[in-house]
Length: 586
Ligand SMILES: [Zn+2]
Image 1 (cartoon, rainbow, N blue to C red):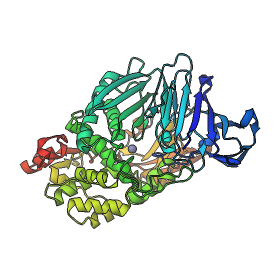
Image 2: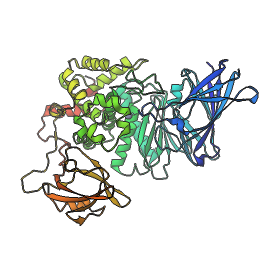
Image 3: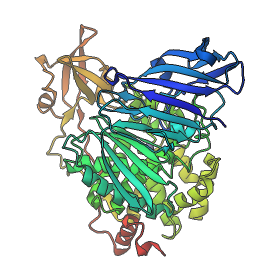
Image 4: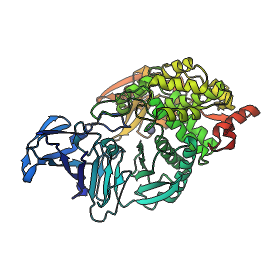
């Protein structure tokens, strides 16, 4: 099939525009229709990218201007006048710093497929070629796309899906290559600024890749590219042969921030297998014009998040304490989010488009993240499988078996994934599914902790002499010099007393509270004290009587139980040992 050929240029990158020229084969039709995606796979929100498109025009045979008629918010029909090829030109504004959108500035550009390329309706299987003209001073283009022979900065995607799945970074980044299993891996750092330690990050990423190769036992890509944009923001997005990460230039400077970057890199690499190739049936082939609902995002994101951290530890890059802290933080986030008793993770997965990606001040009361609860459920499922199979099987085996069976064209249904887990475990898991996936009750950690000789750290002994610290139970922010309520969680004092989001806190017991004084003022009280709060609600002063609550103790941090038996310690060691450890062979 004749390709669509795009030429991208940046005549004034400091104005944040990319100019696109597309040669569209018409197959002799009198009219062709072009379409732009409204969302990016992996990021479940309708984003209406076409709002950044300008000046769509078309030229036919002999340079004749053709009529362009907008037929939908994201579609353009072109009367071809019988031309074999029409040339379509347009400009795209790109100044949204996120992993799924475009960013164009004087020194570099990130070009994503969905918000950039108009394609022919119904032509997803057609090859798409891209040639880039770089602004002067820009030396390098990096993408997972295959180079187009004989064309400088030219690339070829065998399909529209591949084009959308292959973001392009242009500029002068620092580049680190390593070979592993005969595959080239490339870490591309835009914005190191002499601060981000790229060499160390590349070395450690190599350890992560080695551990993940051992885990899966097969490497499906020819090469893998990490586009690491060091742009003082966050996020990551997976692709078949690449990933986009966003981070801070200070991320290699402190241990905690660096573990966070490594966990993100590990998470996105795990998606090469789980999410991109092994996937729910709803996640491909994509309809780029409407939502793709699935109840299985907890598998795609939760299991990936669990293994992102676990394989980082198995690779020797985080300590046991650091890994347990990461897992504990997820358990704590789950156990302190009231929405866990409202929304199951199966439903949270399905509702990603209207809940997770459209969060507001009430989200913690009404929903639960399928990343957070999904990774906690993955942990419990992993240990459950180990228990019911007497240590012979684990979630590792499930993921490898699922990859072998469902990484082809079709993907898995919810029932197929559950059946496969039960098959590997050799046990019926109906009660686990109904409580952990369908249910909104509390998860039971007892068996998993017992199997591994772990326990939750015991909170400070409550001997009745140390009064609990008082809290309003509302989150606040400083807005224009005012102290304003930003979130009121269900079950807190603030919720019961009628404190509202956007209330300005002015005084407690008739003494002014300045924006930076709330914590210090709370130290004057203990849980149970009654106070009078003066707030301004839309500038009208209102008094609220509040009985202060107790600052939550943090009982959700895991530690090794000092009285763990040898068998429990062996279970813990086996769980955390590197994937290539001979102990795993049996
Ligand atoms: Zn992910």
